Image (cartoon, rainbow, N blue to C red):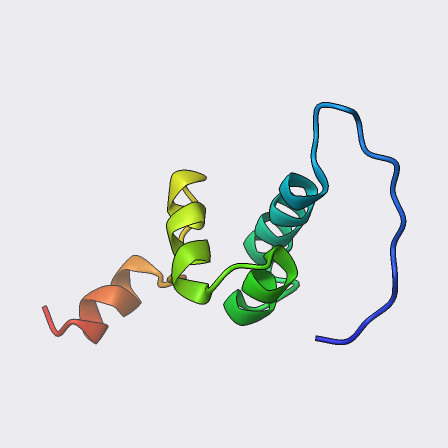
Length: 74
């Protein structure tokens, strides 16, 4: 992922790693980056980021209910 550089002054209560993770999670949630891009931004493996997304109740599969039923052939 190539892009610009952003400089932000963080509150003392927020580490740089936490800020990267929160940014990656939000960008993924709103569809601005892929799972792989978000994982790279956060410095995590995809699998680890998937677990983190689960803790934030963010779906990693975006299926409409009817599409999901069709996909699993119910």
